[in-house]
Image (cartoon, rainbow, N blue to C red):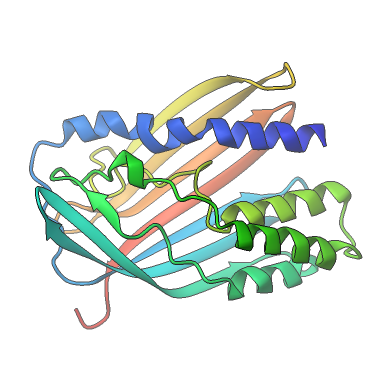
Length: 244
């Protein structure tokens, strides 16, 4: 239980690192006004959580989005259009629970004239009902599963956190205007149990759309907390919507 609490504390401490600070340098470099496509796009976010047994929970949610000019910036509207969930076979019941859950995403998002997401918009308040359902139903489904107690706890926590709560892993402020192909940041954390942990965040942009907006944005978070090492990945992809 001590390890689980340390992990949760570590992810909570990641919010300023992953959401604001790591994006601020790139935002300052943006030299031209943001000019996004006017037509609809498909924005997909894939979240990959590593469990202690080496297996993974993978959830991909896709949204049909569109930039709409508003004042000195833009509003990004969005609606869900698909979800894919991949979990180990013993967690199939929890995977189906996540697959059926409705997720509206963080929309609408306010975007400034340089393409940065307003800091106040990058986190979502948790959907308490969804989290409670994930924890209750997930715990029941896992009760007789042939996995360790630690894996059961991690699985319930991972899916509960995915249930509409991005405060521990907010959307990057420079998701739409990143100018660097790769950047890295490291932090040492003082945990509530008196121990220390380390967090590494690697951000990679592999390609850009013709308008200059990133088409593939990846964030890799490696945590070493109380002797427990975890790797979590989040991948955002942007493509033109079919028929646009």
